[in-house]
Length: 310
Figure (cartoon, rainbow, N blue to C red):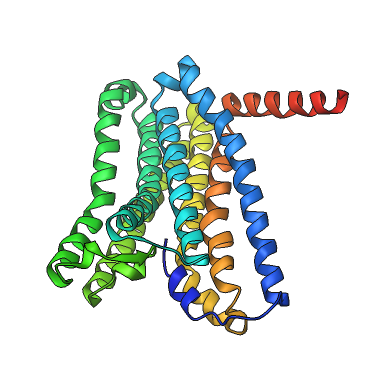
């Protein structure tokens, strides 16, 4: 959750419901409605992940399940932080800091997860005979643990800077739940920017290289061209998902474009640059996969028919 409360502090208070206030409420209502719809489809996909034998044993489905759970955690914690800054309410500093750390960590996890999913597709196409040997469930568990360690590392550094710089009574305070409440030194912003830049640069490089390797196989081996092309399209989808994740850092550009609508900026950033990418990302992958598409169609069509008969 980034810079939402900073913008909120600069928002002017207006008596009554102005056009901007009405627009904010509409955007917030759309976001909450989308969150409910997303939660419904998420429950369907997770039910497939945890009940289907194939989904529980194949590495790519396990990684997809991990991404779904992580995105859900990010959305829940970010929603709380947004509402806590939208309707300023103070909470104990340790409680808020946990929410900030979890939200920040889960934001970084998805790109790393996409990188591992791309590497898995690369191994499937380029080393098909060694896929089961390399991509074991145990190794995927280790990979997920490493992902979380990398995601937590910048927050560990931030915590050390915070404890060394802030006053001893800092964590005994009551504060507004936002990241800005825990920025006490400029080096913390440097750590955050460096971690974001390195994360997306590394993941972007991995996705590009795996796509090139897979496409080379597709053009070189005719008998495997179909499967390699399909894997290539999957890598492209991962690249799109990465770009969607990067939308969360577009708030500075939005501030320039919509500088005359400062009252709307916190809601716009939260709706379009934090929530929307997370809503779209699972559908890009899930609806494309036959296993999930069947279940989604089954539940949505059945529910529609039930309501139609009533």
